[in-house]
Structure formats: structure tokens, C-alpha cells
Image (cartoon, rainbow, N blue to C red; front, side, top):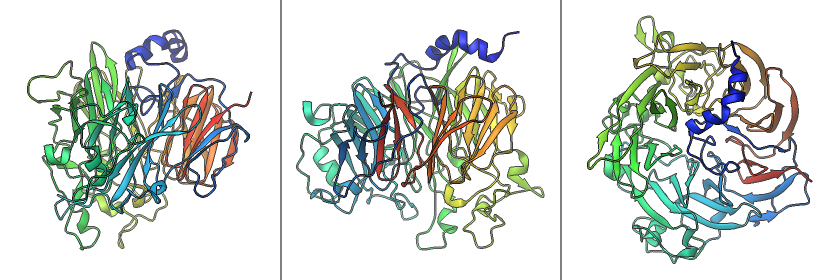
Length: 543
């Protein structure tokens, strides 16, 4: 019998084509690198060390060829929770507007920013300024208060960039910004940047060109909580995205009451749009929003299973779902066809003494919470990570908002070939030795890599779930692992790590960043990209 490694070595290129459309092999045009979201890059020659140079006050970006393995550094804001994406000579990254503090067009209401840099030099080409959503919100909605900026990793499809903004709307942008004119059906960038109730700003060629805009607030009565966080998936002519629908409660009350109910329980958690026009094509009808614990923050992934293409989606209710992909848009919106669902919370995580465990009992900030923030608390969690698809299997872990503290998590390996409620039948294995995590698993060469919130990095056998090794990074970790060039790359609140890929633990380097990182490293065209609070580092092996 052939081993998984042999099968993947021989047929890996074929499997890759089943996971994603053909794109420039060296680019990283979307979250996870490809539709399967396995966090694997074919890049080689990547360095495992660099000097994380900081910029002097007032610098926006600098060509820094003199530092150890540092190609260039770019200034970001105080928030950077998504990951850079790279395509056709441009680098895109979401952040906040701290770097616009001296821009006369920036008011206190501006919260989000998407920056587009030149891939070779780090020069800023254009940027999207996103105003805070300060109007039209029900009193019970608590959205945008965390000031996390644009959390979505931009998705590039040919000459278009798709992103979920910090205001929760879905935008299609021109990759060239306004340098080639104001294209598309959307022509009101000046008012969009200014924000509701403010006079339009004066545009310049460094502003983004919005081609179309879809607002789930207005169109679908969605009410996000805290922040909008989803990275868009494109398949054919259809765009898939989560809505960040979430909980709310009376303003000015105790924080638990402010999280007491789902404001719009009938609003969809997952939607599909026409990528050319932004027209609504489909919504999920699985009732996810009615069961949401906190907010819908997972991103969709895709895989070919038999003769069907499936969209995998982690629910804010703690379930993982598979929907059938849409071949083409119909005249009117339809419901996505649910193929299977899988409960990622085992019964002991949902029930105690025969009664449902209150979700916020597991929040360490609760005065009477039994959660001592030591990783031992057992209770329900949602899916924040993106389901990763590999070889007919879905790998996904559960977790909570990091502000809630540590607690027991679980990593699941799900048989994606089944139908219906596959919670029992579809469980190939489950690993309960992990704590809560928001990280998407990296899957490569028969191994699964994932860190938990506490900073423990796990390597498991993809076939059996057997633990191969663990490593304590000794710092809170939000992002996941990049597998590239025979190495593993990881950043967290304190450090940059490089390991040797494989079933034996071998640390290559550990570097103090000096700036907390909450994202996942990415690689494109021989360069490793690391986003942190304040900085984007482009790291290239010195010749």
C-alpha cells in the first residue's frame, strides 16, 4: 500500500489543480494561498532569519537593502490582523488609519485602511480609507468599538481586489487604484471616504477605485459584533463571504447583558455574490445565526469531493458546514444547498449535569467565571479558524475571542465525502490536547500543524491524529503556520520562529520581533512577508 507522502508526491500537482483556479504559481493572491486554505507555499530559498528593522517616526516605507535579509519595511497602523496578499507585482494588506494621523482628510471617524504597495520596493501605490460605521446601527449593536481596522485579507482575482472592510461592507476594488481613472458602477469614492454626514473629500491618484459595493447591513439586515472579519473566496464567477453577524444587547448595561442575544437571528451567516456586479446570488439557510455564540468570523474554503465542488464554512455556532458551490447565478437569489454539517463541540463541551453550559461562563472577565485562564476550562466554543481541505478531509479547530481567555479546544479531522449530520460518522479523529485557537491548520506531507492561543505549537499525523511533537512558543499566538521551502514559519506576540518541516522537532531560529504579530506569515516570489502591529516586513535571502 502506498503511503500518503508517496501519493501526494506523485499526484500533488493534480490535487492542487482541484483545490484552486490556475494562478501565477509564485503569487499569494488570497488568504491561505489557495482555495483549500492549507497554508502551503511552493516557494524556495526563503530565509529563516532577519533583522526586524523599525522605521523612524514619520517614515511610511523604506527600501532597506542593507539590513540582514530585509528587502524592505513598510509602515502599518496599530492593528494588522489579516495577512498580506501578493499578486501581479503588488502587495495588499489591511490595517487601521494610524499612519494617516497627519492627513487633513482623515477625521476621527476613519478606522480602516487597505494599503497597496509595490512588490519590489515597498512604495505605497494607493490606499483605501474606510470610515467608521457611525450611523444606522440599532442601539443594541456593538460594532467597531474595538478599532481593529481591516481584518480581511484582500483577495485578488485578475485586475480586481475583493475585501470585507472594517465597516462590514464588501468592496470590489481596481488593482490600479484611481491611476487609470474612476471605473466601475461605483462613482462616489469621495463621499465614501468622507463618511456619512461629512462633505466629500478631494480625491487623488493614491486613492482606491471602488468598482462596486455591497452592504449586508442595508441589503440583508446583518448586525456584526465587535469587528468584521472574513477573507473572501472566489470560485468561477461567484464570491463567497461570511457576514460577521453577531450578538448584542442594551448599551450601558453590564458587559454580559451587552452580549445577551443575536440581534438579527434570521440574517445569513454566509452569502454568495456575483463577482462582477456585487449582486446577491445566494444565502445559507441552515439557521446558523440563530445559534451564534458570539460572532460569525470564519472564512470559507473550497474543495473538490467526488464530482462536486464544496464550500466549507466554520459556524459561529460551533458547527462546520459544507455547501454545494454554485455553478452560475440565477435570475433571483437562491439558498445554498447544505451537503453536510458537523458539530465541533462534543457533548461534554456543550452540556454539564444535563444542562447547556452558558457560553459566557467561559469568559475569564466574568467575575464569577469558573475559567481560571489556565487552559483547563471546558465549555462550548465557535469556529473562528478557516476549515482547511486536503485529500478529501477537512481539518478545523474551535476557539473563542482571545479576550475571553484560555480554555480547552479541539481539533477535528472530518470526512468530507459524506452527507447529512455527520458528527459521528464523519469524525475520522479528534484531538483534545489543544487549547482554544483561532488559527487555521497548515496541512502538508501527511502532517498537520496548528498553534493554540496559549502559544503551544502542535504537529499531528494527518491520517491518525497522533501527536508527533509540540513546542511551547511562550507567547500568545493568534495566527497559524506557513509551510514553505521545507520549513515552518510562525509569528506571535513576541517572536518570529522558523522550524524544519517534518515529524521531528527542529528549531532553526527564534527572533524577538519588538512588535506584536497577530497574523500568519505568507510567501511569494522568493520573499517572506510578516505583518505586525506597525510594520510589514518583506524578507528575502541575501544573495
